[in-house]
Amino acid sequence: MCICVKCGCFSCKHETPAKADAENQETGFLDVMLAIFLPPVAIYKKEKGCTAKFWVNILLSSVAVVPGSIHAAIVISS
Image 1 (cartoon, rainbow, N blue to C red):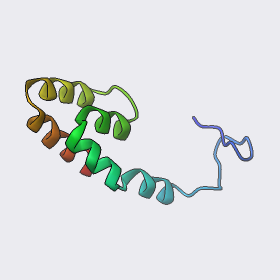
Image 2 (image 1 turned 90 degrees about the vertical axis):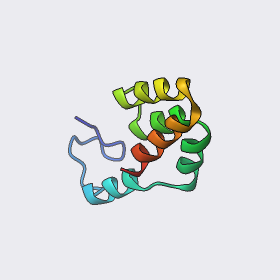
Image 3 (image 1 turned 135 degrees about the vertical axis):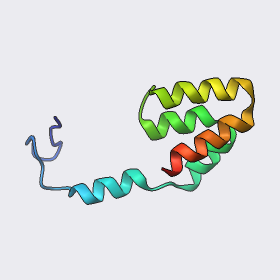
Image 4 (image 1 turned 120 degrees about the horizontal axis):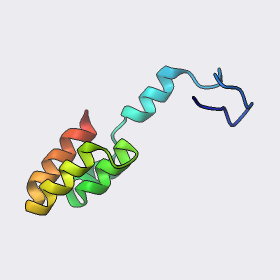
């Protein structure tokens, strides 16, 4: 349950769900660069926390950078 910062209501009408989803799905230049050079950071930023995908990427990145980067690119593009 979220509380709107603008008006304090529990179901705010200020921002449409389609607009919020579009902002979350947009992959920018920074996300791509993070996926290449710092894969776990890119996934942490995209998933907004330590999810299972984050820990899988930590494991892949510890083996080699390339598998971690590929996994991060797939996660941020989906």
